[in-house]
Amino acid sequence: MDLKSTFENLKDRATEMAQAGVAQSKRLAEIAKLKTANMAEEDAIKKAYIEIGKLYYAEQGASPDGAFAAACERITASKALIETNNERIAELKQPGDPEPEVELETVAETVESAAEAVADAVETVVEEDKLD
Image (cartoon, rainbow, N blue to C red; front, side, top):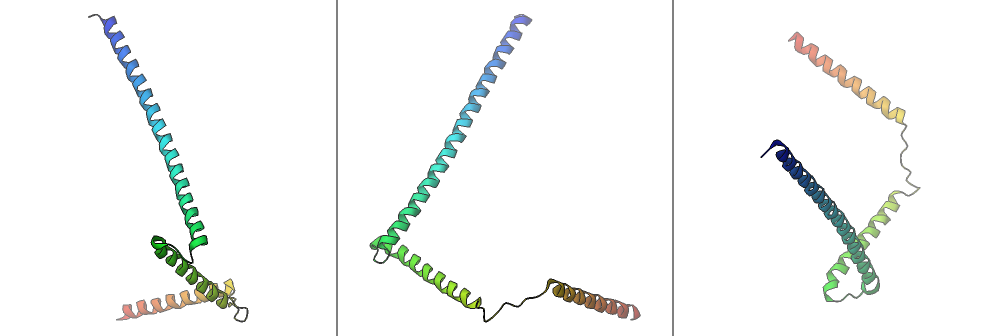
């Protein structure tokens, strides 16, 4: 075997490997594209299930058929709780009970005064410890 034929064999093998790599990359890219398409379709299915459930509840929620009764009852109970919570929120927001308005500067001054008091107290304790 001469050097020229060895070089040709190596070149041919390198070309085959490069082509195999390109083919593998194309395959993996197509797989990724198909998986992405599947996820989009699964999302569409979930949305359709939700829509079916909403339609069923709207039409049959008051008197659901056997297997749907428990789910419809949970929805009805949750809606009642939401309504109760919203009523309580409305009560808490009544104009008769205005929310206290606190100036940001007042809060900052209070925090600053408290920080100074704590610093003074710490300094006093440290000085007392030095005397003992």
